[in-house]
Length: 369
Image 1 (cartoon, rainbow, N blue to C red):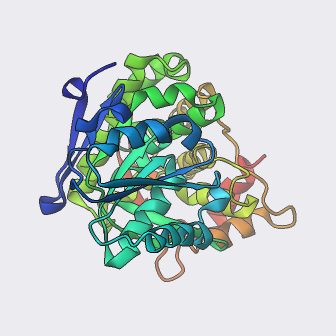
Image 2 (image 1 turned 135 degrees about the horizontal axis):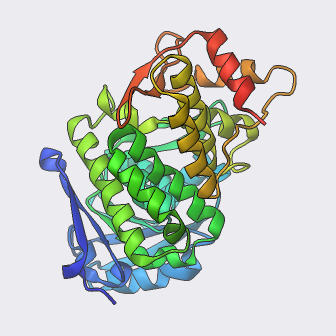
Image 3 (image 1 turned 30 degrees about the horizontal axis):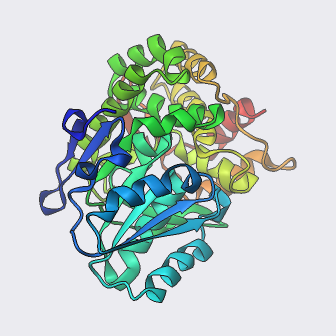
């Protein structure tokens, strides 16, 4: 087991809300990884039916010496459960056990658990402390970092939520060993995303190590998680509440969220939808003269090697592009009904721009299966 002292540290610089992302093996069993949480208080570990049997008992033992009482709540597993109902289950547990505003919530799971638990922490008594303990690659490189918390609405993904930062993020790489291949590939979509928008050298590295990443090579995963977190931390530190720069982290997400909502939450994994969305966004970038065809082919080839879809879903057989446009107008980046896309503006750079509906329709028609 790797001790906490040898874990890699990535700081999130947000003034009084600053915290550390710790990346290493064995962190769920190391009390030092959770030292940022206030001691002597109640704690609630929120997990799901898949992750809790694997890791909840281990984390609860780790926290037992820090908190007066540690309880757990197990939610159903899946994007389709990122709802008011799951949120209320957390509130029921907190109220039922007399939790006060010093009670610490621990999110043990993937992005659904992290987002829902974080939103509950932001709301309960107008804000209680929480810690992220992400157990999926997608959560470790993206959703657990930066304080975006939310639940879904049938008309739009992540549309009900809050910006609320955790006290710490503990990324235990050992947890990735139990990820199914489909979930590992879904996480790789969010890793790949960082190259085109911020660091082409990292994209080169991903291309060279994609097979090792899919095979769960510890060294490759450690570097991928660290570099992804470094890029996201740099962006969040400059734009915590997504007023400008942070929007670039949504590369592929405008199209991807439309797929998730249109197909029904859970039909496609988030990373799968983002993967197809990145190809569509790259193709729209090419149509607007911001990227060349060679780049689009390169990105699509890497996404395919990661075991991810490169073509979007048909979500409406009668007017597929029209349904995409309807759903994308609910996107958080939309302004006055105008869809704003994260596009590639040259290698390693991204920009948020609008595009004519007719052109977007062409891209959707060309890129959907």
